[in-house]
Image (cartoon, rainbow, N blue to C red; front, side, top):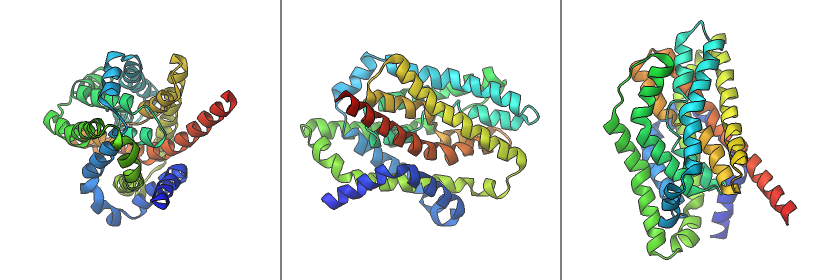
Length: 320
């Protein structure tokens, strides 16, 4: 068992290098790893369950009773970043409205479900992450059309039932199950079960990153100088998202766990939702900036997770 746990720790401590390798593998071998795409919702549900074993009912309710940090993340993700992306992409890619639409849509979608998993890996505030993802996703059928209408003048109608069904299966039910197991077992779920299945969950995260990246294969094979420029833009803006989350935490003087959650919460978006909307309502070129998020945000999460872990440990050492 100790060897199994060390295996999981090794994955977590080297995620900065593992994440880009997963992305590259998915792009290079889409036929091999694309078959796992159907299993992604199930893998998400398992990972949400494992992360929720570290929560209890009181902690989750406390987020809603004291919502300052959650509201701060939502304000930045729902208002600041979509508006900023619209303004900057409109300047840099004025000659191609499709790329502007894609770059804006990329930051109109809700907080990524996978944010919860990264927060668990780097000791973030899981209750805050879970509550933020739930609220962001519930609001998405209203905030996405409103944002696109205000920022782009575009009108879309979302499949609310499908979005809510996916959220219930991947987030709500496994999260409730994890919290209840921990509560009813008087902490056994947190102290015993969660560490036992944690290495398997980290392997699932690797599979999800690889599987999601297979969708980028066709775009990478037919890249143009203009699209290459959009790649650079998405990389830079995504990096700023993680930095903005860290800065927001420092501004609000939060603890270390909230610091981690704000970084991932502000930096990561639900790319799958964005890709579906782009493919359903807009020309094919609009999908490219959205999918670029898949290429970069997992890699950046690994980098920023490692940076935050070293910073937190250094601060703890100095405090001691």
